[in-house]
Image (cartoon, rainbow, N blue to C red):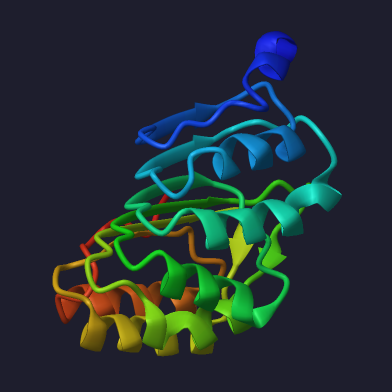
Amino acid sequence: DGTNLKYYMNSSFPKLKELFVSMITISQSNVLIKNTHGSLESLKFISNYGNIMDLPVFTETLINSCKNLYQYDGPLHIEGIETLQSFFQKCPKLEYLILRNLKDHDFDISDALQQSGPFVPINLTRLQVTNYTISTEALEIFLRACATRLCRVLEFIYKPKSKDAKLTLEKFADQGVIKANLGKL
């Protein structure tokens, strides 16, 4: 928990590879992540503490401080189209990505997902998007980009909001781009 966190705020962790964050604020997490000096390979963030307005800064910290990240499970500020694209470009080793929406409602990430397709890390094997909305067109464009870029079949976990989106997932599963029967959370 965050009670003893003040002792670590001015410390350096250049060899820290894995970090599980809970029960501390987003801004406190920023400091911890920066203090790893890019050594983090795995980060799981499940805290709802702090101000959601700090999420853009947190995302910027991830983009600029986690070049060795191969696994991330947590929130990402995706309101700007280029954010997800930058995350993919700055974290080219990414293999596992679970995006969690901290908002109280589904958030549409169609534009961001569609624009980031050409930048998907080539070794991405799992992508889970929770409480987000993706248009069928954006899903199609993104998965088409995955078909060209990815080295392996993608475990794409997303609960489609329409029959057309479900059919798109089935089509790409039939083509061997994503694993079959994983469109359900």
